[in-house]
Amino acid sequence: MTEDRIEHEIPGAAPPQAGPAGAVLAALADPTRRHLLDLVAAGGEATATTLAERLPVSRQAVVKHLTVLDGAGLVTGRRAGREVRYTVRPATLEATARWMSALAADWGRQPAPNERPTGAPGADTGP
Image (cartoon, rainbow, N blue to C red):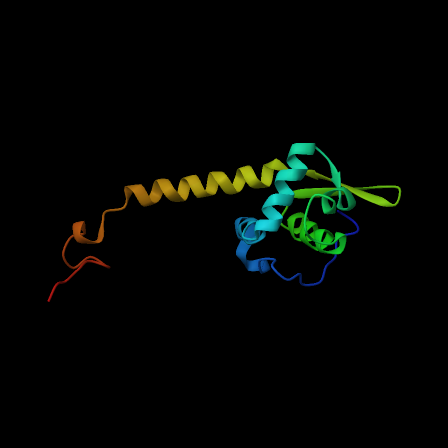
């Protein structure tokens, strides 16, 4: 939700200094939020009421989870009458996936600790 976004601290949300990837990873750390994201993606659009019917949690809990997903940029909500219809925002997840791929590629290029030259930072100096 854009103009209706709740601006107070939300339990489970990443701190602002964690950046977009931190917010995405914090949001996806919860299995219920991952399931919600899957359900919204599969249906193309969903309301908190329809999502709550498919989960063992209350509608209020679903709304709180959707607020975290929205804050992380993974879903967006638009008001339709009395309901809010949520859709997936794939760009944020794709950007996080690219960051993770780049990070993994960098790890693959770094020498193992026992391959670093003697005296290099982090090198094993031995007994």
